[in-house]
Length: 214
Picture 1 (cartoon, rainbow, N blue to C red):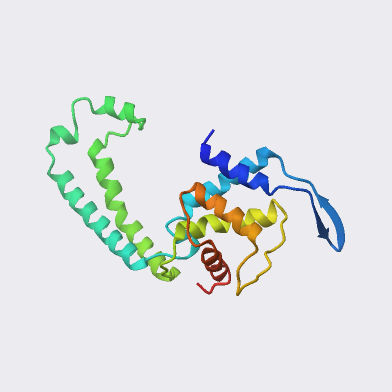
Picture 2: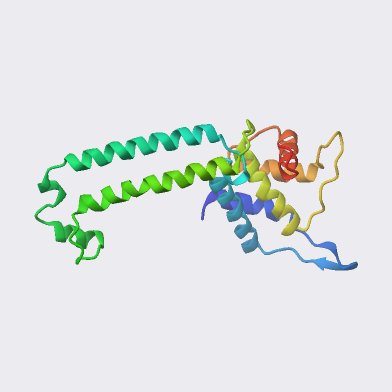
């Protein structure tokens, strides 16, 4: 078992308790979730950290840098195609061509030389490149200097706080500071990722992002 998952699950479990919630005006008891469910939610947080950490899934991204990198990739692909074309025939279509195709799991009836497969894939990148550039420009990602990894973890952790643990939305005191219970919970989870920011400020950034004001 992943030690980090166990730590996160343990933190979630520490705030896991019976609570009264209202459904259509009627009070109903919320029973604590199982430890297995805590582990499942821990995986969600861990996955969010890995997928959202560059900010793109949060609508935050340095699009200028992304477009520059795409142009560099396109240039490298073009250079690779030129180099492929210069390879000698013995390399493009080696004597053990069909044996190599079999090992690669390709269709043995396709006699297109192996290098040709790779070259054609690179050529097709031109079409993909145009679509990617169009996507980045149309999405109009916001640039932000905030720690996107922190925002990713807080985003999923806050959702779990409400949905899985049925905790109330935090009461705001001291100009927007959330209550200590939530801050301790978020702080504990962030530390498992070796992230120890100003938790008050980090949570305020999350609320701004949630309202589209970041």
